[in-house]
Image (cartoon, rainbow, N blue to C red; front, side, top):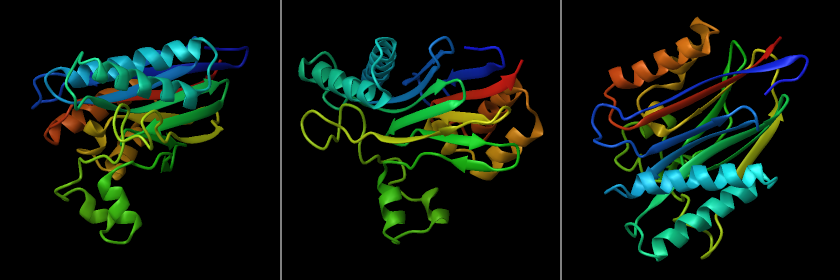
Length: 243
C-alpha cells in the first residue's frame, strides 16, 4: 500500500508458544487493502482454530467488498455463531479480534475481547484498545489495581468474544477508535500471548531499541517465549514510512 509519499512497513508473525500443542491464533496482513487482523481463537479440540480462521476470512472478505470495519466484525461474529449452531465444531467456540483498516495514514481500529492495539511514537507506548475482560471490569470498578491484574486467577476470562457473549442473539459490541499516524509512528496489534507475558514497559524498551520492524518482531516474540510462552503469540507491526 503506497502513494507518492508513503510506504507501509509491515512485519508479522504467529507462534504456537512453548506450552500449547496447537496454535489457535490467526493473523491476516494485506497492505494492498490496508487491513491487518489478529484473532485469538478459543474452544479447544481445534474449535479455536476454526473460530479464528472464520474471523479472518469473514472480516477480510467484507472489507474487500467495501463494508465498514465494525460491520465486518459483526458479520464474523454471526458466522461463528452460525457454525456453532450447525454443530460443525464445539459449542464453546469463539474468538477475540483486533483489526486495523488504514487509509494512507488514517487508521480505524475495531476490537472484541482482549487482543490489543498500541501506538508507538518513538518515546511513548499508548494503548489504543481497552480489554473486554473480567479483570478490566474489576479494575474499572476500583476492585483491583493495575498491578494485581497479572496475578489475578481470572485474568484470562473475557467478557465477550466473537461467537459468544453478544448483547443479544445476533450482535456483539464492537469497540472502535480512529486517528492519524505520523510518518515513523508504529501500530502494534497483538494477542494476549504477548501482553500476558511481556509488560508494557518491556514492550516500550524493545520498540525503542530499533526502528527495524522485523527486528522488533523477533525480539517481542522472543520476550514472550523467554517469559514462559504459555500461550500462542501473535504480533503485527505497521509503520508508515516516507519514500
